[in-house]
Image 1 (spheres, rainbow, N blue to C red):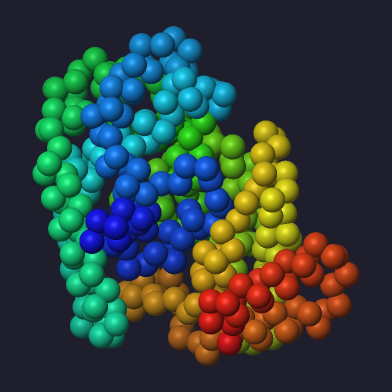
Image 2 (image 1 turned 60 degrees about the vertical axis):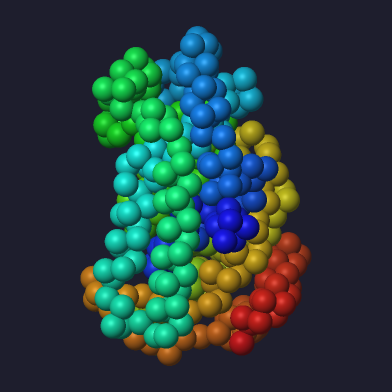
Length: 332
């Protein structure tokens, strides 16, 4: 169980509508977020956070960011410590388990019910890990008033009053890439639902997340899944898919103003685009989605190839997309 749970991304755990959360895995980073990472050394993370807060250069003001401070200010520890507080001292494990156990199992298939059972076991394991932690690790205004006040002071006036989000934003501002990928967008709820978020405004992918290319990527698939199959909407989905391919074509190329390489997890992207998603009936009604006949990735790719695109990089991206989809068995 430990070998299984420690590889899970906390923002994807126990979330039945994880189609809204998967974009957090699309970009490969050097220190990805997993349960193994946040449980590796919670006491040490607290000490590193306290140590960083005693260094003037780590006390960033307002919306200031300095990614060069990642190592000396222990940016990753800010993110780890925020999520330890969320899951272990903020009721995060119980909230997630309650969410999955009260989401209308009667509407689920046997496969989906089995997934709920698996998530329950995972939740029990995480809860046990939390029980083994020293309760004094919790950050509260009563138990750690000086650190709490300092963290809350390092915010701009428009930030919400949530210390977990402040820690994550500080992590992103100090250069932790995983923290900088907790983001929101107008048509998507916060990644992880009730998990602390908001680092997307301050990390090195800020420019990318604000681009139309990124919006095309994270909505690719939803248009031919969620709308009728009349020609106009189908054509729009093709255009959307082509824009997403243009972004994927930048794989291992320069990305943001820091000129870091942009590396995609192609398996995560292809799985997201090609596998039909389960949308709870209540969510489907709220989103105005009607059941439609899904188009396969094979149909979409074939339509794209018939358009006569000449860009070598885009054509290469189409070939790679098809290759990965076939390898995963999700092409047709």
